[in-house]
Image 1 (cartoon, rainbow, N blue to C red):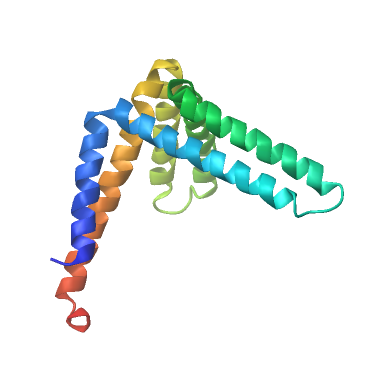
Image 2: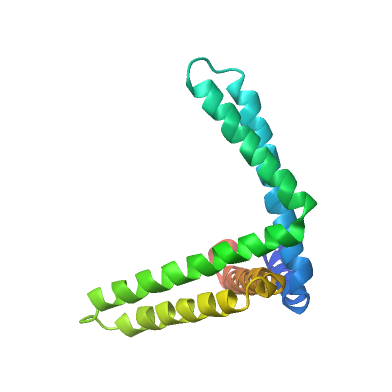
Length: 170
């Protein structure tokens, strides 16, 4: 088995674990996001000290805000997860509305109904997350990350098998 196949299998396993324990997976996602915010804020502040002019103060302020947000998320992951879930619900609703509007633009073409269905599904997901918020924070992010990992893993395993069967890849 090649590395792509092993990576796919690993992602499938991580996806299943994420779906089976969504609160743990969601907490891990929020912690990573918090650490990224913290590092980005610190880097931005350090970069600002090399600047001159009026942008320096604004860059320092934005860096401090990002760093403080990162610290807050890492120190209070449940609150961070609740906020991230609220953003996710908002995103799904906005995406659903956009897809529904776009689907009617493509209506004379074959397949426009798939885009409409996808938009309706996004609206339903957004509504499900919103209607159970903040409790949905305990499952939504972890389940969605798990589904993403499953899909990515399955596609890598499939791609690995196709590459293995291709004569040029041998």
